[in-house]
Amino acid sequence: MKFPRTLRLDTSDLYVFRLAAEPGEWAVPGSFAFLGRNSAQFDNKEKLAFRSGWLGTESFGRATLSEVAEIGEAEFFQVVERLARHFVEHYGAPDLAAALPAAREEADLAASLCDHKTNTLLALEREHGPAGLVERFRVIRPDRARDHARIWEVLPDPEDSEGAG
Image (cartoon, rainbow, N blue to C red; front, side):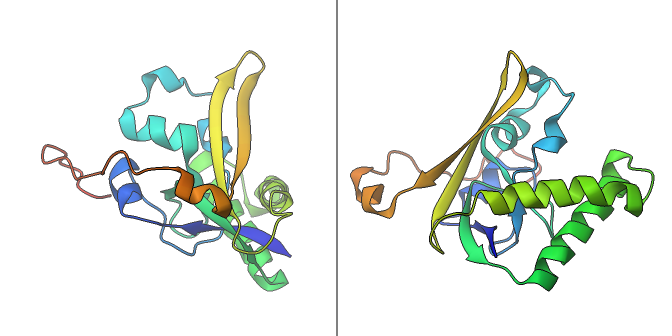
């Protein structure tokens, strides 16, 4: 089975997200974290997480990119269990048994996005639409990577008291 895994190409995630996922974490879109919330009231880090952040399933930090990777059955079920625990601890699920179906649905969605070669890069875009939350998933084509010039560099904000995390 294939599943998204967080990837860090540079240090920008450390500065743009409140909590950056560690490289190599199994990842899900994690849009559930934004349901029922008004993105107009988000601070800059929350806006970036909303627009493009994958959710790592160990740190529950965000990553800009994920890559398609092979996952074993036992690891997949560990992801589901960690998500279910997260739903209980942070989103008000009454217990693990109640949270498991929603966690499995999120993990199944993530796996369904990985019908690509191993190491294929995936990006996600999120916005509010007329019918609610809209997610778009894109494949970053390696043959197009050199078509893009580096146009900025992300540096730490000296006035940011939160630092890199």
